[in-house]
Length: 104
Image 1 (cartoon, rainbow, N blue to C red):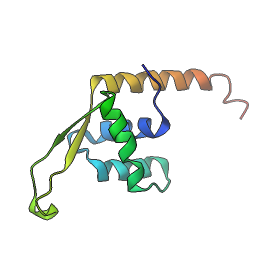
Image 2: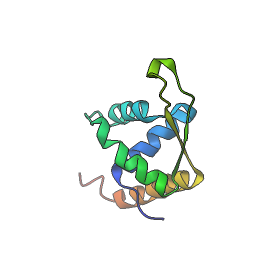
Image 3: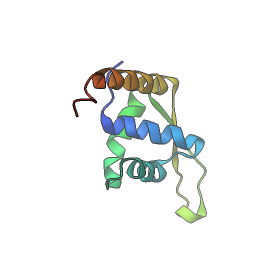
């Protein structure tokens, strides 16, 4: 499995936490909450597209709503491959940090 970038990892984690209600704006807000940093909404889209292209996220359009002027939301769900990528990333990170934490 190809390594995840940090933004990809954070977006997958945010989508996983949100479950079925994961769409771009709440994912964006959750990433900001998790990192304590300001992101631009536009910075979320490229990693979302990459994750979906790689099969780590799946998406589906919801029903149109009057509140959105008839527009539909695109909902995201972490696939099993995405979960595996997160497990591998977590294991690799733990291994990389081994023996270094005391030095810091």
